[in-house]
Image (cartoon, rainbow over all chains, first blue to last red; front, side):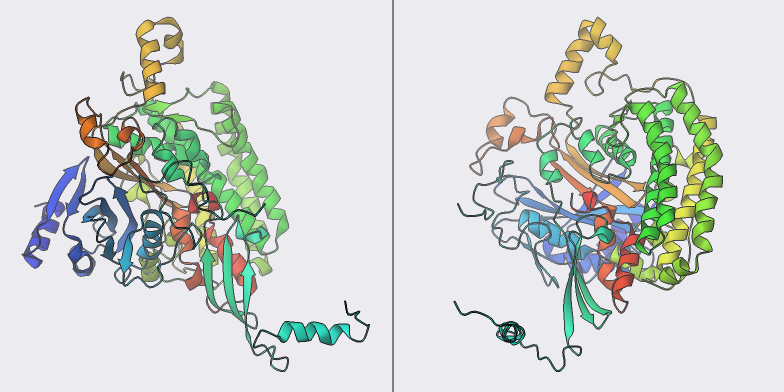
Length: 162
Length: 438
């Protein structure tokens, strides 16, 4: 049994109630599941000695520009002892545009989640310091959403008065 | 207007200053002070702003503020073809543009499912390692300059200049190279460039040693860095450090070894680690890595095979320039690729490489080719048109830049140190704001 099968077996054994949707593309394993369980699953993946996913490399989101499940959260995590990268995904709907923060599991998710909030407007519950990363604090829009035009929105940044 | 007399000036200013604040003159030195460092500060290596809370000269807490160089590259990438983005990768980590070029084309090639010919891959390895040396030289020089040793900067820049000369011959640009292409590289190495590389690796060791002697025997330099900004291996992994900063904490994490790409599997080199985890260890890692890079380039030059430098795969890879001018099919192919871009199959990939600063990863999503009937379903659901629906463009491009994540450790590293150590710690982390702010 290779390591990728072991991950799925462990996950299914620990969380029988969660539907793990796994696929492999160009050699990378990706697992998709409900956003409610994100912190539990991440804690399990980090804490289990055989798996030991101790690095969170990246957190980001995709805007699919559709009504249902508009965003997909994407986490890239790495297991140093096993030398394997795993991609976790969870759909986030626009009507409930929030997901639990994984900062309690990996500290490195802190800024990555702030950036995702800044760019996509997805709120992270229990995040220690959820401020905008790049844009000014009073900026109202989320630039990487597909409905934000490339040229920007006139008047969105305060300019000097005439 | 009331005229201020000579006697009246001083108390009136004090009075105005104290009006709306809780500072009292008696215990001015007892108070904590907020100091704003940057964004225009020579030692922050770009437009990094750090807010420091000070107790006397000791840093109690620090908050880095980013975004002064935010150009929205991820948004721009969604609106241009994969080819068009290559020059933009130069502007990410502008101290090692070649390494970024290689990282980008490797990610796109993974998304397309193609692989460059062996000779092109060996050329890519060579330029990545040269870029690593150039970046580490500048990092070392700048770090030494930050802590007051001005001479070394000139010496390391002299060495870096030789690498820029190689770029000049190789691709016609010294700084923003854009040398790689999807499926290969722009042109084969000229004999003059190859001769210059050989000459460079011959004389480099001696010159590096010269720089090193100047620093390692310098009492002030060692004292300024030793035991400053210590981070343990567990903390470093948890906060997401990569590259020399992580290996300076004794973690053997090098993507060239752990998830091999190009032909790093066939190359014999050592992953340099130092267990101390302080600023001095990070400096030692960089110097030793430059030496390892020389070792890699020597092997690459020995093993480099002859052959094509660009994959022959119409509809995916640009044809050769000479054929565009003489043949009809190639002309059409070139026209289509330049105007409409390539269409990788629907899917998403993450590809990361070991850059001089750490792990540079690209997360790319492609929506595939949109057929005529599918257009109707795509448009209008949210009441707006998205550019091309990802056809020929990345639907999403996320840049996982090492400097951004490494900077996250700054508050942890500077806590409890003096203000002057903040400068040394930023220098030892070696952030480049071009990629931290994207």
